[in-house]
Image (cartoon, rainbow, N blue to C red; front, side):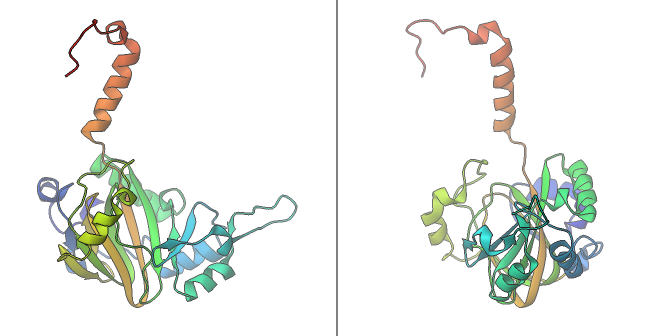
Length: 262
């Protein structure tokens, strides 16, 4: 499945792009488009017929996440489910410029479930999938970085992406972009590393830490964000220390008095 997301061979991707630099892959250089994974009709089905519940959906507009009460409502009789999507509320917020985020599609939507399963086999790292449905000429989030790598797969419409170099390289999961808000705001005024518009069938790879923002153009934009949480040397070290520290009497023993900890 990796070959569907990149326009270079896997060895080149691994050596030159993985964790290092963004990669734009246009539809003309990819095996096929992504309409089979999530089409606009699929989005309608998920929202109107599938009974999506929080936290599998959220909404945002111009950098602000909307309160759940603005797009969720109760469903059923007797034992109600108060956190189910209210399609009328969702459409109203969408019409006023809010982005719909469908989260955890790797556990919810069969075509994406299969795609993610095969992509994990190719990458060897954990993978998840979200979808972003943005109305024309709107954006959902301010410039920010993610703490995981992403493959952006444009399934419908067009979206303009502005990519800037990191302000904090290789952030870990507890090093969110909000800790570097001022630096990101300044970086967003620099010359972009990439300034591109994704068309249907295009793909964009972004390593974690790269600052980005996006805005829909012309018509409704639908894209999948395939997030990859790379296993790092830090993860391995933590696991080793946890295992050895709990099982080894020598590791649990006190260090000598007067030891120079430097």
